[in-house]
Image (tube, one colour):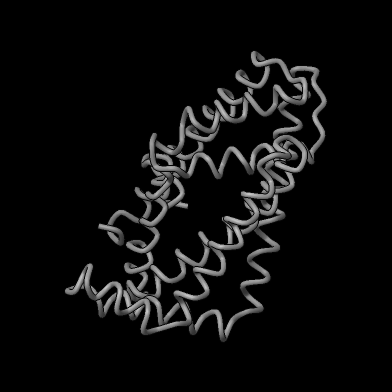
Amino acid sequence: MLSWSFGLLFPGKIGEFSLIYFLRKEKIPYSKGLAISIIDKALTLIVLFIFGILGMAIFLKNMIIPTTIIFILIILTTIYIVYVDKVFENLIKHIIKKKIKYIIEVKKEIKNYIKKHSNLIIINLIITAIKWIFTALTISVLFLGFNVKVSIINVISIQSISTIISMIPITVSGIGITESAGIYLYGLVGIPYSVSGSLFIIALFVTYLIGALNFLFLFKRNKKKFI
């Protein structure tokens, strides 16, 4: 929860990698913490890309083929990097020689986790998908406050595409990028820009309010442990 709050303060939500630091305070080595963070982010991206491709099939049909190809290439490249030791290690030896042992250790942790805990990975994918469906449901409810009905499939698709775009580390937590993409896409299904813009402002306010309260409560409660 604390790492999520930190994620709201940094570009591309990279602040969520603060989870590694907090896990270290719980006696979990940096290599394992980083491995878990990377795996979690990768699984979230997989779910978002699947929902996003669904959205492109609805809104951006001309982009679905190149996007799908890029997505498949990213997955295959990642698998190749994880399982082909020499290629990956020889490459990073020339880039960051001093940190090579730590990177190899993280890679080993990821490889072992995938091999031993494929069932937990599947459970994580299912829970992540349910999470985004629930998020889409709450947004659909918010739209009802404006007397506007939006299909939950459209909401899931649009939110997935917007979230993927917001991960580009340009602005703090993707603010401005997410909203612009979302307003444009909701406009394609007939939602007035004023309505979707107002909804994003409300959602943004609520998110940062919860994030601030969460940070103040948890950090104060565990201050001695985390500092």
